[in-house]
Amino acid sequence: MSLRGKAAIVGAALAGCGEAHGKSAMEITVEAVHGALADAGVSLGDVDAIATCQPLDTLSGLTLAQELGLNPKFTMNNRMGGSSFLSHTLWAAMLLELRLADTVLICYGSNQRTASGKLMTALDLPTYEAPYQPMFPLSSYALAADRHMTQFGTTREQLADVAVAARAWAQKNPEAFIRDPLTREDVIASRLVSDPLRVRDCCLVTDGGGALVMRRAETAKDHPRPPVYLLGGGEGTTHRDISEMPDLTVTGAAQSGATAMKMAGVKPADIDVVQLYDAFTINVILFLEDLGFCKKGEGGAFVENGGIAPGGHLPVNTNGGGLSCVHPGMYGIFTLVEAVRQLRGDAGDRQIDGAELAMAHGNGGVLSSQVTNILGTESTL
Amino acid sequence: MAAITLDSEMTDMKNSPGPDAVFAAKLAEGVFEIQKCGACGAHVFHPRVICPTCGSADLGWVAPTGRGTIYARTVVRRKPERGGDYNVVLVDLEEGVRMMSRVDGIAHDEIAAGLKVSASIGEGADGGPAVVFRPERGAS
Image (cartoon, rainbow over all chains, first blue to last red; front, side, top):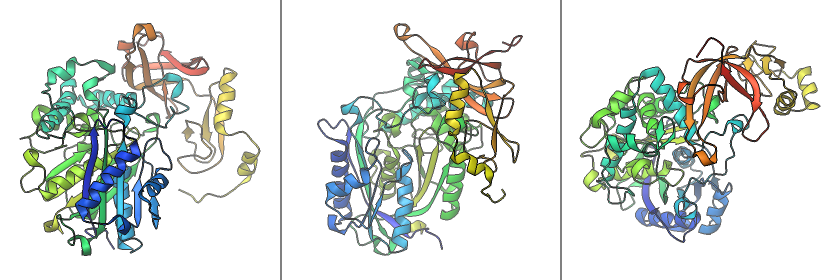
């Protein structure tokens, strides 16, 4: 038995992206839910399973049920950081396939920009890292970038080109938060925060929310918009704290991607458009390698000189990513919403012509949790 | 991996402080020790209840040589009025375990992967004892 193509995303929406003054995280979440239900043509009362994960509210699944006035059959609150939502889709597909639920809602929202202006987290520094005061989470990614540069000769310029590509995509997306031109030189001249990472290597701090509605494939075409089918999914968890990561140059994406692509019956070369959780520039290089788009150690060359920018050899983070579009603390659901838009043909100036197969990939913790989803149009079933 | 059996070690464990508390108490007395698995011989850090290699609860304490090699490093850039820049490193100990730490006695920009270092007990950010490193004599 396989989950391939058994469930589909039938509704998707964003809310409060950028700055959502005067709104709580849950209010932004519920605005996104309202949008996704309307997009799906589904009544609130039809929702019988819910999934969310929020940075500060550790019981956010319960809060969500309360705010929506629902008594769901299943309340999923898996907490793996920003990758959680790509795990929620897998659990949703399982519930749907087993007929334990009929309509699953997956959602997220955060007001971290207008509420605090910085990453909001309930996490304390780990016991065996706290004495050395690494910046959380930035220094963890800086250590990974340093190791990648040492081991493979990845360059400062190649890291910068990830941010430059994200900005070029953002310039095609009217919803992106920052759309000013950005050059490699701008990135390299930006303020050093935790070597080798500079301010422009880091994702934005914005508000924002997203929501998805999933149903079984057999009823997916009863909704107004074209269904986006979940063809495969996989997870990998290698550690929680960066000091416990077995190899800082190999992430759990190697496992999650292989699992997801095996289930979907596809290989990297088949994928038309890729959405990767780009909390920092190094993430994209690591994930492209681990997901098999290039060999280990060659991610820098892959992204160099516009490799993943508009007109490059692989469209990556077509919304502008966490680096230039939106990053409200946990970005995972935004990879899914952008994949849905590309597969529906709704992506406007940034639309990838004929996109039928998309990858969405989430990262949680400090390269700790990796979750991959493969999504496709009806033609890929 | 062999099946886990509950042996007398587990009975002892119930009445003893956990490995985090043991490590902290040793450190407070000026002693840096890591764990070694009596079943498979693997060294273990951070301190754990069962061996992450084989699952055994037979973990004892041993003194590492203190020698290690820098695996990765970053320098956190902080304004001078708030204390200035400081380094954060990951060190691979000779015993095969890795830990986060800081290297003292060397310019931040001279710290790089491959640098040989040795451990001592210094002060952590909270003022408490912490394992820190210095470049090995003759290495830099």
